Image 1 (spheres, rainbow, N blue to C red):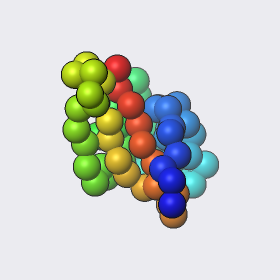
Image 2: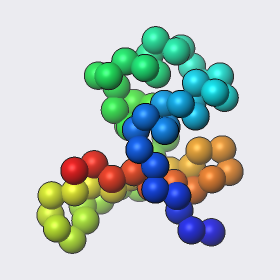
Image 3: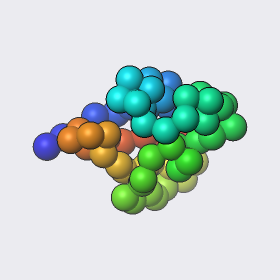
Length: 67
């Protein structure tokens, strides 16, 4: 199954909608992707400046790019 490209606000909204964790923690701008989801793999993109993170939201495989 192809991974869905998601943004940090989409991840936060999914967690809030599904009732995961403390809403104050989820919406705290200091908490990044690693604090919010269990990342199965991350690495650098070919450009050497962008990182990608692989994880699942429910049954949906996702990828998040941090530039």
